[in-house]
Length: 203
Picture 1 (cartoon, rainbow, N blue to C red):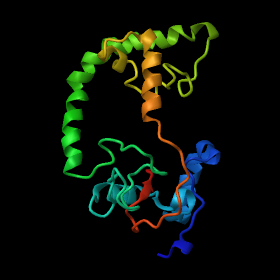
Picture 2 (cartoon, one colour):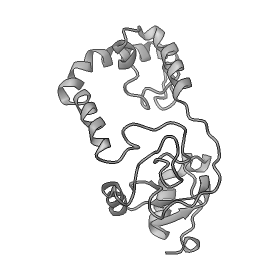
Picture 3 (cartoon, rainbow, N blue to C red):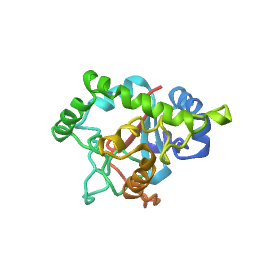
Picture 4 (cartoon, rainbow, N blue to C red):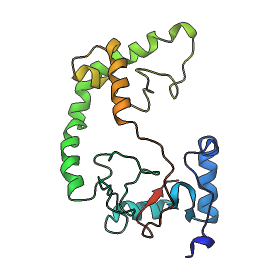
């Protein structure tokens, strides 16, 4: 398929995408399920479930690898545009990926999550106490330590794990955000290997 035949004006950082993501993906699936966008240096977008599943399971063709320092435009991770940091372990390919995944699995096993319930209950009360007087709350936008509790479900756990009180957690997360926030710089146009750098989305 030629790129000019599959070009679609797709930008997952645009205000339009934030408002109409479901409609955009529906249009993609109906009109151009394998699409090319020129945004952010250019990348392919697959939008059908079967294609997303195939891409996700084919590490040899669709690499998640992020080379640091950069070693070529084809291996710049799955974050588009690519940032200066590597997201571990999602921006790794097997077998390296599985080494990190095994370490994480212990932390997310049912028994481990059960042990976190008291901290989660405490954090829930902490959030409610800070907005109960207003009589309303927007969980998608409500800032706790400068972050959304929905976007960062481990936010209540991390301060406790470091023996930091919830009241001091805001400063901890501010330091964390400043240290890990990628620099949003529009990259020069790239020519990634077809199918290697891709943005995938399930319906």
